Length: 84
Image 1 (cartoon, rainbow, N blue to C red):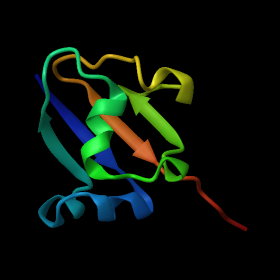
Image 2 (cartoon, rainbow, N blue to C red; image 1 turned 90 degrees about the horizontal axis):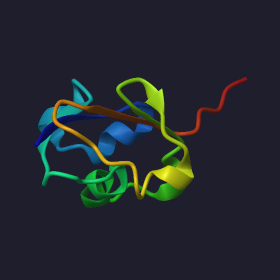
Image 3 (cartoon, rainbow, N blue to C red; image 1 turned 90 degrees about the vertical axis):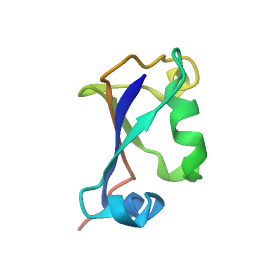
């Protein structure tokens, strides 16, 4: 299956160089892959995986290992944001 994987803010550095400008990469994953399985090859530190959305819907941390992706999903991840 194919999904779109997007990383935002400081997390874009974990994407391949050619994908960083657009902050997205197209992934081909085995059917039934979970959010956690999609993220794992990118080596993201879990403390930086703060906001996870699939098709714009929030995925809580406790569901990321079991939430299955389907063809055409858009998986987007943001780090914790600090501001003042």
